[in-house]
Length: 197
Ligand SMILES: [Zn+2]
Image (cartoon, rainbow, N blue to C red; front, side, top):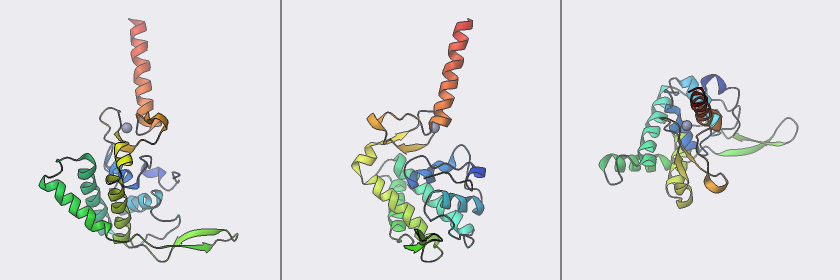
């Protein structure tokens, strides 16, 4: 998914490989979902809706809903508290409940140049979008291969969890431009300090 210019001012990232994990990443390094405006940009940037889908009807209740799904999904992905503990089981019940909501229905329509483009049959409802993210979480957590490829970034204090689909499963960072680059800079500094000593 390309990073649209609409998402750039908010420093939103979509590099975990799964929409439910991209949602978790919005707490790092600071709360990104601080306003409905940013949530709209996140929804568009995540690919949950086709580009240009009107989201003016999104309000504060959407922000509350997405943050709550994020909290519950984080409990399941990080398995903290452990499975079987009441908060884990409550999170499971909540995500399952949200996953019952069907995602917004897409349709193919002819664009200006006659090429088919995807659009929604109507303005998406919050419950439909939460449903799409919750279903992604259910799919991820019940897919043994995907679950085995879950990694936490090796960057200092970086909590971002991603699915490692790289060849040989050697991806170490949430992003080579961010945490990977930070590590390269730190290594360079250490080497420079040693050669000065
Ligand atoms: Zn990282």
